[in-house]
Length: 491
Image (cartoon, rainbow, N blue to C red; front, side, top):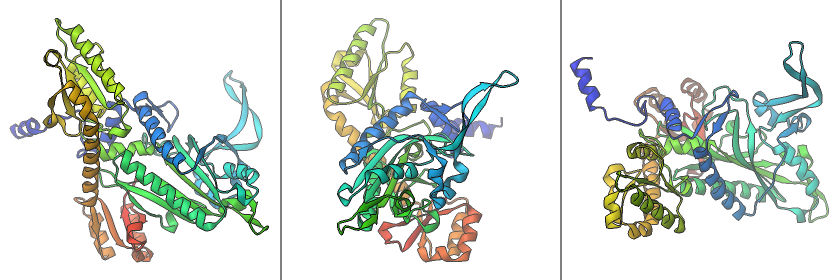
């Protein structure tokens, strides 16, 4: 190594995650997941194992988002994993959108083959599709449950897994099997259906901003980007730290597409028979991938407090002559914080305090607390905020820390949101012509979204640029009344 290389190496700050975001963003993303012990690839191609720390995040998503969904009058239910092929075949446009992603069950029962191994034995009289989404089978149920306008609206949600055969899997972002919630609502009028589709999108946007500190752009998808079978698809789009978009949640106005194929009919107020108007909406575990790519840094995760598996990590810093008293003090603090409503982990494992501190950092625990002999003697704690790092380190009276922690977590949420919003807003570039769009995406030093007149999407040159740069119209923002389009690369 030359003297110049040695000098450059010496100046490069040490980070817990390698490579860094700037060096290799996709590899950095995978390294963050491993370092935080969130998930790992499974023996099943394209699928992942969500480990306890990663699943705890999903549980908090279920708790918060699930409560918001119930608050707008939706009830939880559960429907079969296996969908008869004939159900899906009823909706040609829908199945065309998912056909290449479907996993199909064609046999039941195993038996020994000629070489002694197990082979499928009995073909099914009708194949089953492992649900890629549940419009068709829920539509079948609704056709039996809805008889009169008095039965409407009917609002249903299920938390479940789905399967879409993924060719290029990436943990949390794209896996063949993933977890989500899918809502399916049924209405008397077209106006009620559209109002519901917009309302559920607002639920998603509020959740993402208030719980995950992720700023989003609310808008409508272009006809080419709509959900198969929908008459309108509404979306919330977020910007990742590499400038790419993540579709963080969608809500679909399905019109009468699925009620017609599933025969969801009801007797109206006029005594006549009418087709129902339906909506569907969903958010998945890819949201966890989004919070990583929006908030994490080169030392690992930074967890938004409301969704964090635990708010505080308490690390006893012990010596041979004070271990019992320091550990007892740390455990007492843990109980005080739990009694105040906080999620806490007191790390009393037999390991070096420095290792515990780095684990807390890599897992993105919002507040790290260190207690040693001095803290015990003085009745204090030493606290560090994960998003601010060492510069936030302070020593507080123990009771004052417990009293102030809620405000500290609120401030952290606001700071994470403000930072992400500023990052996004600085990287949305207005262009007047397709030549300007071409220049932007052709400049490797620039990244982010382009905003331009929606009318330009109809220009044949846009189709050329879309293919050239692998970009898509992310949405027509509500804020621009559909007059503008946001263009960008995406996950």
